[in-house]
Length: 318
Image 1 (cartoon, one colour):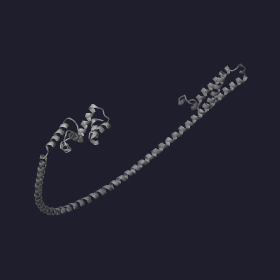
Image 2: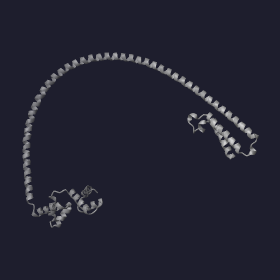
Image 3: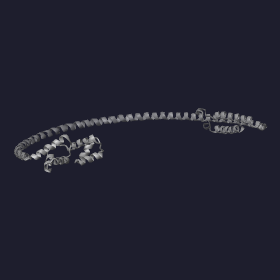
Image 4: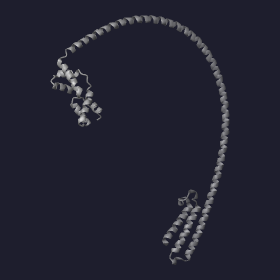
């Protein structure tokens, strides 16, 4: 046990010395305002005495001799001397702080005087600037008056010039009007001639259109019964199921029509092949599942283009 108290005694001495040198380090657990050499000497000096006494109590009785008593006296004297040193250091710090405060007050006084000097100088500068501004304003007013006089004279001259220009412009306008009247008369005559030409061209065009319509009607009258039946059957198929263009031609050929009649029928009906692709895609999805790629390939197999097949799959939501 005496070894423990000996170690604590030695540590207290180290902390005591460190507290005299730098109390902020050894008294970190205390508020900053209470970290002083005096408190460090008080705390760790007390600890030195306490641990020394405990060490003496727990030590072997053979070691309790006069040397131990002398050591105790020396420790107490050292503590007293350390406390005096701490108080002396604290007094020096207070003296230093007072000197710093005096220096700060003197500096503030000097700054205040400098500020007053600067304010006075600024006032003088402002007065000088005001005088210069007044002088400048007077000069500007005189210049403005002269400019107004010059402007008035220029306006009168301009008015006179404008009257002369107006008179000249009126003469030119009359001359221009006469020229325009002559030009207008010539334009009306040219327009009349152009209208006659346009009327003639329109009549020729109408005659040509009538001839083409008659020719088309004659061609329609030459449609064979087989072609008419192919058209009817194509429309019938499309009324209840979806077909691609090539698929419908193949179906009509399967029904016995030749390729020319089947092609004629498909070419002469009104149908949106993209919409037919959408309908067929929906029909497939109603009875069997498909992936997007698989459904596109199936529609292409049925005769739709890749664009129509892709559009149909997009509209189907895949």
